[in-house]
Length: 122
Image (cartoon, rainbow, N blue to C red; front, side):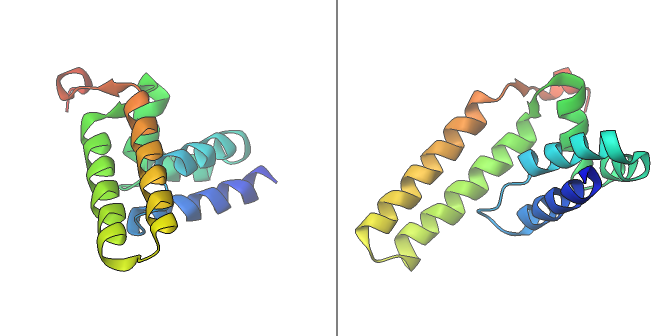
């Protein structure tokens, strides 16, 4: 069961790399937790994955997100939600809902601890 849940959350995390409103970090961390208990093979694959591995390793070792990942996430969020509000939605309630979602996610990202580049050694 954990392996199946890990696969589902890995798929969500991979989708999040390409789709702006789909999260990447949280599903990758859930997948890592499932794989750690169910499959050494998939856990190692996730840790060594170029797109998802660094976030999981940073969280596992330091319980934080790097400045780079945080800045990219916030910038993409503002860009995508902002363009959706300005160009693609006409209804005011939908615009307000999108803005509130954006503010909520940015607040969450800012609340998560950050490690500076000189702290990470990268």
